[in-house]
Image 1 (spheres, rainbow, N blue to C red):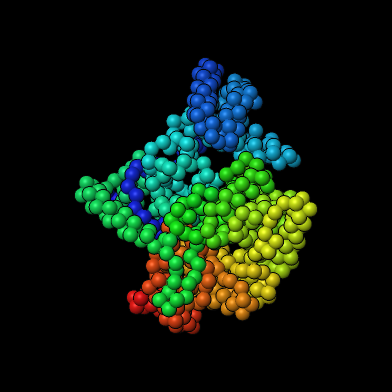
Image 2 (cartoon, helix red, strand yellow; image 1 turned 30 degrees about the horizontal axis):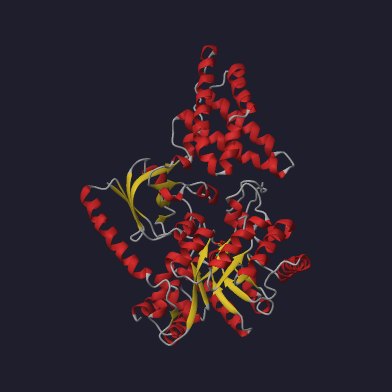
Length: 565
Ligand code: PEP
Ligand code: MG
């Protein structure tokens, strides 16, 4: 039995189960040499691996187009000829021959001008991983091999990785990299699965199949616990479950303070299933629909029609409103079918609204889909990463074109649709008084705002301690945004993870935040805090917390506030 302690939980909960270790390093080919006598047996190994891959893929390709493409690749004669030629003519062993061939094929696809053909290189690499895993007899990133309940253990999990996992079998996540606002953390919170990220020495300590207790309430992982510990945690798990059910009842109640100020407490979602789960819990609105997942879990840019169906369903389901954020790709989020240039600083690079404004057809398809959905419920549009009026004006001019087109086509939409921006860059904070005159609402994106204000990468574990939204600079920014919004009479919300942080709830309430949007799992706790205090009291604490200049002082003031609830 061994315990790893972690600083901060990415998503709270308790999971007990076997570790499924995702280890791509194991896929480095062995370098053994072969002679002419070995050629036939090496080719035989390759043929057997292809056969196995095909039988795995035939099952999973039925419901997933990405794997259907992999199935085609596995049977591709170019792949077969490439590998077998290298075994025959260069006496390369099967693993090296496979690696060389995959690299060659991927490079050919990557160099093509046609976007569709370029995107095939990711498929080639994936099929390469699968075949290498089979040849080496190791468990690879073949997430579809997960067919029992497991705790996923990985160095990191990219958004594209998580999109290929059958999450029904995942009890929790532990990753060596990533911070609490990385996408694996956000997914974990949306699904209410426990997660610990930035876990030092995770990959060298945990082996595939180890039995784990992942306790993100007390921020630890216990590896191969003894019986007494298992019994203790089995009891604890029952307690957590009971407490969660008790709190759950609060999800549908209004977030009204003792002195009658009501704020909106909404959910962040990434797909229609999240919307359904939130609405089932009684949550009445969506403060952030991260539409990028629709794009990432696809083989092509989703069409207007495909998007319309999703947004329309969300609009119909939500009793109050749904804020749909336009595509926020780039940074750490890529698309399997679109080749992004390599950038030195992707978070400062081609992402979010910058991409939408450059790829106007893609942007228009999305805006038209959102507008059409606005005929079916209260829908609002939100642009991410805005830094300038020029960007806002350009985005709005594309929106105007879409509106005109729909009017000419006789298609219904909400002519008074609200348009807002995310405030997540220092530029938007510094110009917030002016932005407030030109938009219908703000939503503060503290995940990015914190990294940009503090110059601290949100996913870098080495500096994770510096990433703190309670830093006075972040809090001052939030205050300025709320005050500027209110001065112009517009609503100010927050959809960064800070909105769901129970330690921040009183501060944000006291600063005057109108709408809190968070993972559905955080809603009951935040509602409980808001319902047990008065706005006047929260304001006093917020005033105090915004007049000090160390994180420690801020935390002490908020601790006192919470104790006096
Ligand atoms: C944010 O930056 O706070 C935000 C909500 O956007 P994302 O986490 O999707 O970048
Ligand atoms: Mg953001």
